[in-house]
Image (cartoon, rainbow, N blue to C red; front, top):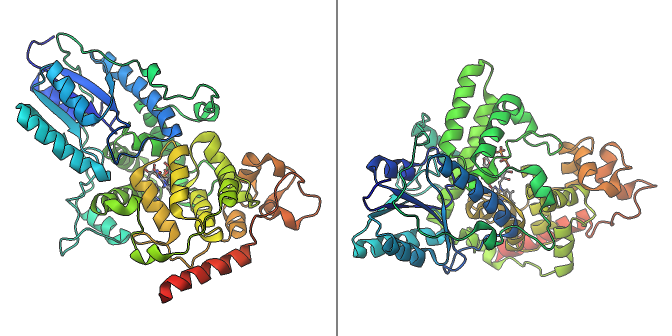
Length: 473
Ligand SMILES: Cc1cc2nc3c(=O)[nH]c(=O)nc-3n(C[C@H](O)[C@H](O)[C@H](O)COP(=O)(O)OP(=O)(O)OC[C@H]3O[C@@H](n4cnc5c(N)ncnc54)[C@H](O)[C@@H]3O)c2cc1C
């Protein structure tokens, strides 16, 4: 125990003890440290966490507290407007400093600057660190100094910046203050649903926290990395890492992933195209965060302004069918049910389901993004906004709008034996093979599976006409 004034270590989307620059810097001062997490549903402009994310957050905070306790520390919990809570607790404990990891959401920079100004006035040191991206948004620029709008040159520019990412160890111990401030009780935050408890499927599938992240990465690198290029588009196989919620909550850093992956690659002696393809996806995550940082409006408005005129339809009934997985298109419905049950959906199916909503149904991508925000355990403002805009055709470096996925062909191509659909749509369990993707074409099908809510050809035609309309204008 040390008598010098403590440093507040404000945890945000960095719920880990390893490779944590702010924590390592705080420990290096030798001062006592008060780790703090603030549940902030009040700051204007903050996207309030959805139900599935709240479920995850509970587990993640629990796991972080256990890690900190093993290092002689603990996690203090408070709720309210982050700026106010920080000022209050800093005064309460006579803090000498506040250290934290920067964020990339639209309000983060403004909030962080306001917090820095508050602490300057109070004579308290305020230090902001990176750690949740491989490259800070200011560091990767085109030759003319502007931010990138296209992925491939962005990717190349990242690689030329270097690929030997160093990581920081978990500190051996964290000095504690003479007295701990009071903390809220995690269970009082009611982050987990009670009546009804809809989180059974989430519990079955996930282990929030950095140990869960480490296990996922190890399993991926030993069992799946080499087949990643061929399996990553197959929802019927466990071909991807499922690290997205762990990355979103910062339970593992991209540098830890990068380093471990390069190490596995060097040790394996086998071809490493799988690992290269995997690391390319980590750079897609960087790209989304760069986009959100430089164009903070992408969560609210189309990146391509032409789409401001797009004739989106309002159709509650179809939106409801999409959300519940009762559109009558098996691959879409399987995805939406996987999402509801597990809080996660395979990337290929996210693209198909998002395309179906924005093109077959002509429903605004923001309706889809909001549903994903509430139901995904990996709901992430950067990845979600950029990906929805990419599919809808309005984003940076987006898929062209006229590319309308055919859900039947997508199903037969990426779920050729129908195993994925059979798993999530039990009404279709009698169907064998690829027939399952167009059940209405077979006689003796399922009587309790709905007919398609739109005809594919007619819906495609309608989407193309709508697109022509905004192009002409
Ligand atoms: C409509 C739509 C919405 C999406 N919403 C989200 C979201 O809210 N949160 C989220 O993390 N991802 C989102 N994605 C991107 C992607 O689907 C998920 O990151 C991926 O499916 C997570 O599974 P994984 O961890 O097994 O991925 P892996 O294939 O193992 O990839 C490793 C990591 O790379 C990153 N990554 C992979 N694909 C992408 C991508 N296309 N864009 C950005 N980063 C990527 C993720 O952090 C992922 O964990 C969305 C995609 C679409 C089409």
